[in-house]
Length: 189
Image (cartoon, rainbow, N blue to C red):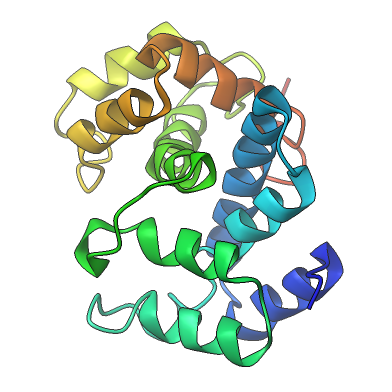
């Protein structure tokens, strides 16, 4: 099967109804596509993997099932193993080691997109358009802010990509800005 973005979108919206989870998938897709362009990789394939990384989460949020149930569904529907492996490797609890650039990019962008979204939404502008890497770094030091996000995962993601953390944050912000309206992060500017 050659995966298409339209088919991936249909699969995502079949299993995910939460607007915030859909926006998260779109944010991670934007960031991972940005890295695909940077690395000269297949942007469509990388984007599909990112769009689908959490598609099963709303139905099966327990880590004993997520993303394993999603991987089964992807295989049943004929998605390439490259996408299935990326989905499985984005969580350390799966035991699937990250080996490819796609797998590292997905891990590096997943939690960071959520953190950047939270950082943007607490700004007076409620926008990613005026968000800076230094503002995100400042929020990372505040342990009470977005407490569910493990700071060590944000740092490790950048390390796995071989990119300094500030540069990685800037790259992800830039990618999210391209889709700010769709992500609900255009704000009141």
